[in-house]
Amino acid sequence: MASYGQETAPDTIAFMNFALNQAKLALDSFEVPVGCVIVSEGKIIASGRNRTTESRNATRHAEMEAIDVLLEQWQKIGLSKVEVAEKFSNCILYVTCEPCIMCASALSILGIKEVYYGCANDKFGGCGSILSLHSSSSEQSNSSGDHSRKSFKCQGGIMASDAISLLRTFYEQGNPNAPKPHRPPTWLA
Image 1 (tube, rainbow, N blue to C red):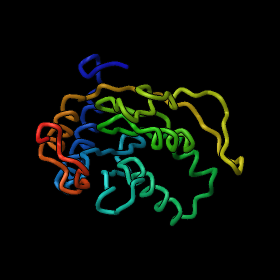
Image 2 (cartoon, one colour):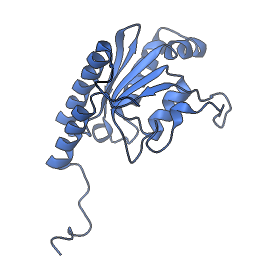
Image 3 (cartoon, rainbow, N blue to C red):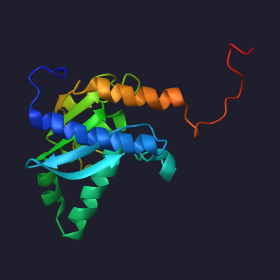
């Protein structure tokens, strides 16, 4: 993984800034501030931000939100599964935090071309921090046997300090949606 500043392309910086703007929207909505954009042929074709609290659905991560935008668009114009797979194979995802295991697995199944992310996800990272789902070259299928995982190029550390700053802001202000603790903090006991 290369860090920001090690020959990072200007387009990568620009797209990561768009992802950071999505993360700020999540922060403004009291969500964990993670945002992403999906790019094809040098243009943003979808964006997403965490919406787990708002939707009351733990799977509504930024990546899943953006993927669903594309799937809905492509379904409306009648693309086949093969055509959708071809389109995803030409897409690049820019996300502020390393995709979790769920999102990295979904990106692998969809056959995304590349992923660029900001900070590492030391608890749930699926692109090297915990598991390396991006580099799996083995063909694995789901229970129906019709989806195989594909490896994708992955680079982290892009504007990581900006992403970390947003996460710190969220956790320092306290999560108003977090459950009440069952016991008082140890410093009160």
